[in-house]
Length: 177
Image 1 (cartoon, rainbow, N blue to C red):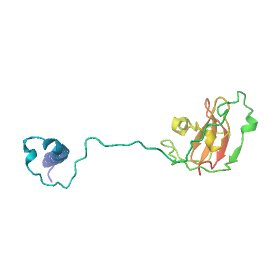
Image 2: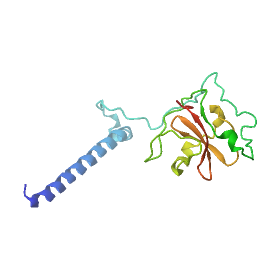
Image 3: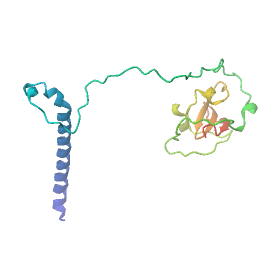
Image 4: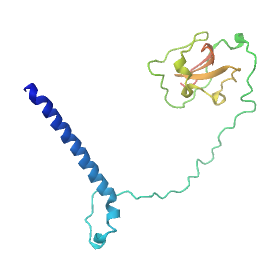
């Protein structure tokens, strides 16, 4: 194909595609406006049944009573009474979690993959985003973090990190496995 015809043909096909999209949108708008149009002078004329049903303008809703017999667990007394002093030797362990919890899929930060972390390592700043914080750590049997530390989810593990440096103080392996 000659180079001189390539650009005009591409422009013509783009215009044809755009026109087709506009026609489809107009057709959809006409279908949704069909009940409104029926109130005009043609309201007495019988209409043909269309294969697409128009959605009602307002949906009828009713209150949902919620789950039956389920009580959300209350936070235990003192759940956020964080120790002010930290004895690092008490925390520096890699524990195997006694129980496993299924709370949904885990998506690592963009550009990172799951890996096994151990205490003493430094967790990259990308993991300190709010979606990785375990603010309800007591639901997963995790200890109350000392002041200046937070629990972070990384794959199947829970990591207790220093929120100033990112250094890992403790690892609970397999909490979410």
